Length: 82
Image 1 (cartoon, helix red, strand yellow):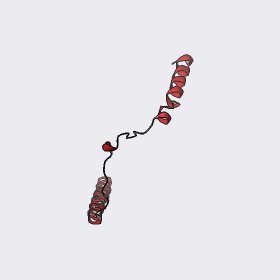
Image 2 (cartoon, helix red, strand yellow; image 1 turned 90 degrees about the vertical axis):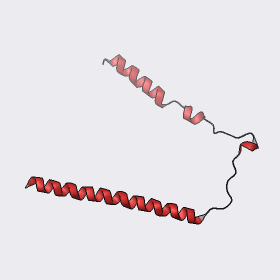
Image 3 (cartoon, rainbow, N blue to C red; image 1 turned 180 degrees about the vertical axis):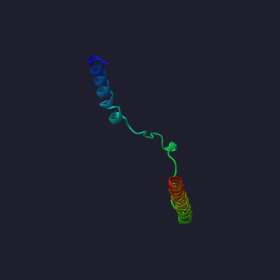
Image 4 (cartoon, one colour; image 1 turned 30 degrees about the vertical axis):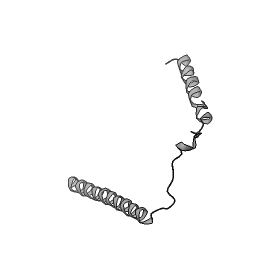
C-alpha cells in the first residue's frame, strides 16, 4: 500500500469512528397510552429465589467441568512427559 491509500484508509476510519449517529438517536417514546404495557405490582420472591438457585447450580456445574478438564489435561501432560 502506498501512502495515499494509507491516508485514505485513516481518513475513512476516523470519519466512521467519529460519526455521532449514536448520539443523535432518540428512544422510542410511546405517544398512545394504550400501547403501554402494564407491569405487575407484586414480585414473587419464590420465583426469584428459584431462578437464583438454578443459576448458581449452572455456575457450579460449569466450574466443575472446567476444573476437571484442567486436572485431566495436566494428568495427560504429566503422563506424556514420562
